[in-house]
Image (tube, rainbow, N blue to C red; front, side, top):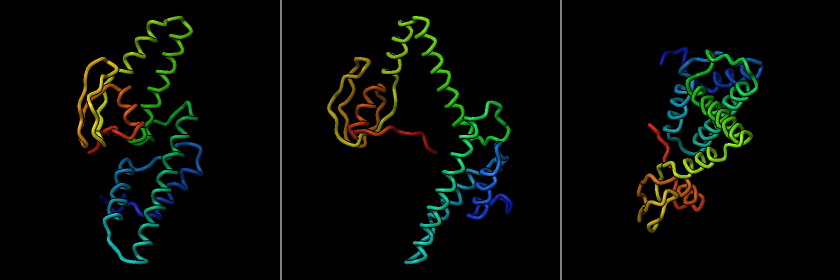
Length: 185
């Protein structure tokens, strides 16, 4: 990481300030979020006692608040602008933006099918969504279940990981029996 791309609380504050003072999406270093993650990770690794540890924890909280604010401001600009400066979006923001585009397309698809009387299409969509598989980690033991796809799953022990239908996973997650597994590096 070069000197000019290093993140500190002052440079982060300056970036957030620039973003709040502009109506357009500001250009930011392409590695901004990765550099920020390194900065926060390095802060968390430092071990102090007493007052110094409280200062470090407060600084981490400030960085998290500024980061959250920056992302929210930039995403709000994306959602309110029809003429988006794609070149100024960072890869991580494009990842978020893509999901918003998917949501718009899905909304239009449901609306179109509904107003055009395509109930079979809607039924098919609903069934496919209920039975699409997601990966969960079990927090408690669970006896064998019959999935939304009418297949049998389990039994499961605590910490087991399994791929089960979405509808069943959501029910287990709501009961705090399982948690969705997110892909992380």
